[in-house]
Every structure is written in C-alpha cells, then in structure tokens.
Amino acid sequence: MMTAAQLRAARALLGIDQKRLAELAGVSVPTIQRMEASPGNVRGVVESLTKIVEALDRAGVELIGEGAQSLGGGRGVRLKESAPK
Image (cartoon, rainbow, N blue to C red; front, side, top):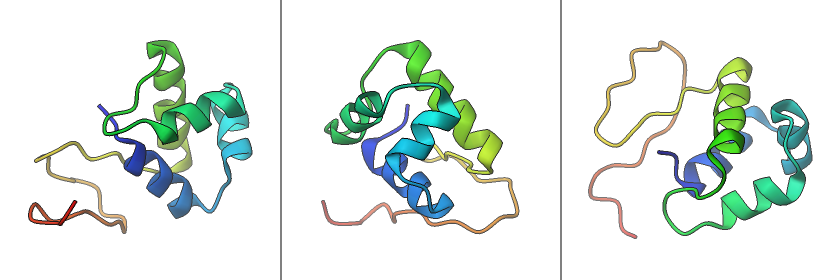
C-alpha cells in the first residue's frame, strides 16, 4: 500500500510534477491527481498503481511500508510513529 502523502513526497524527492510522473508511468494526469487526493492509502485501479510504483522505482524512489526497514543506502525521509496527524 502507498499513501497519497508518500506519492506526493516521492514526486518531490524526484523534483517532478504530476505530468512528468504520468508520462513515466504511462497513466493519465487525472489518475495521478485522483491518487494524490485520496485520503490515506491511494485508491485506484491496481494496474495503474503498479505502473506508478514501478516508475518511481525506476527513477530511484524506494517506497517504505509502515514499520518496514529501508535496506537501501540512499537519502530519504520518514515520518516518526508519533507524528501528529
């Protein structure tokens, strides 16, 4: 699962806009917009979500699940468990 906040943060880390991510993933801009507007976990067609995750991976973004360890050596950010909502 990926949250809308993770998706926005991934784009920010790459320095790309919604249009560029849509091009990299082979999906439409409205698809990206809907996913980023989702409350909590991203909702959408599994195929589109898979394409976006794969595009982010190819671009060098590692999505870290809740409670998962990051084994990569790159830079990144992560919310603390006690982060206010």
